[in-house]
Image (cartoon, rainbow, N blue to C red; front, side):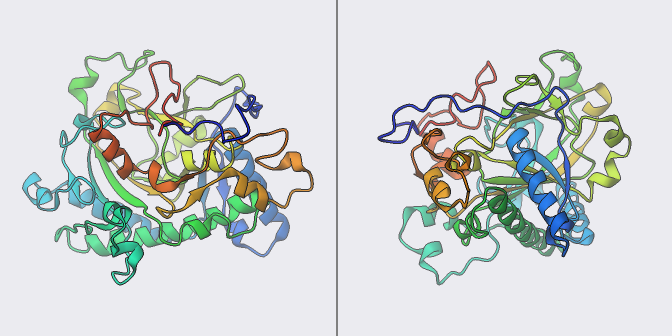
Length: 397
């Protein structure tokens, strides 16, 4: 079955996209103003969020409320873990919650030869709550395995859990900003994430000199550390050890359609990238938010490439927080439209002139773990783009 047009409304006509200018860039939004007392500054942040989500689906967040110590501790302990001998890391090896070595598993998004990773799921689980430990197969899928924590480096678990909780808090801020930008009640999105199934993944990309020597770096087919894809989340939050080097996005619509754009894409950011990027978070929307907003906001295609030979020699670490709503959350654009307090019906995500494009679904159908079950059935990964750069599997069930 496919996530086709909603039942009873027929195939929706194409929805006009926001015009994306050639100079499209990933903006930086100061969230300190969102939480501040200045109503005009607060409203400005909401407008910036709406604009970024509609145009490009990515933005940097500064003054996000997470202490610099929490950020640096998380990155430092992730680096320390990866620098250990393989034998030590393999003590917590696990496909879902734990360590996967370089070449340790097939992955349609990240070539297994180009990364190693450590993952954990929710860190505050009530083992007396049926949602987490009940007979429901979904509980077993997401919580049947506990997080596996390494004993070294010392303090790893504390640093990782502290960062996990801090990002959960920031996502709550994002959810309130999203709701306000869409004219919905402030808890519209957060109420679907009270028992979320989010993963925090530490990724290390080792040097790739040998592979890079066989690839023309600046060609139309550069070496890809991460293949073109979208995320199945509602929102993804990234923290970089030395900036988003090689990250590219491909917005939809306008003059820049089907063109890969560097993130950040202006020289000033690159000149002073490392120190400033350690304090910023990069936010991108996932497929669930595109479904929820009926294509008004976009889950933008992105990839990571090796831009030059020097970069191929670099060893890099990043932390990726894949925020996933409750496994039983219902993603339904019509429900969002009903909650919107818009003066004009045409401003809603679903209206007489903007029919629903996707049937409602339960979020558990779209997660990374759900894809593991699809892999066993020989079904393609819905995150990955086809050879033309199109998201052919986006609506596939």
